[in-house]
Length: 56
Image 1: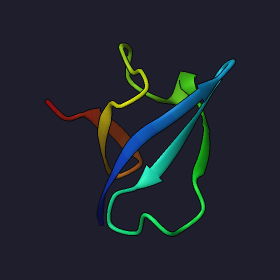
Image 2: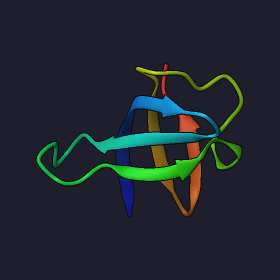
Image 3: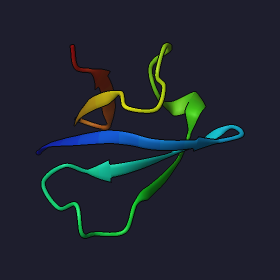
C-alpha cells in the first residue's frame, strides 16, 4: 500500500502529518527521527513498506 502525506506542523521532536487522500481524518503524530532528513512544514511524503520518502 502507498500513502501520501503532508507535514502540517512540527512541535519539538514530533511532526503532524495529514493524509492527502483523507484530509478530514485526524492527523498522524510521528517522531521526526522516523522521517527523512530535511523534512519541514509543507514537505510532501510518500509512505511505502514502512519507509517515508520526500516527494519533489
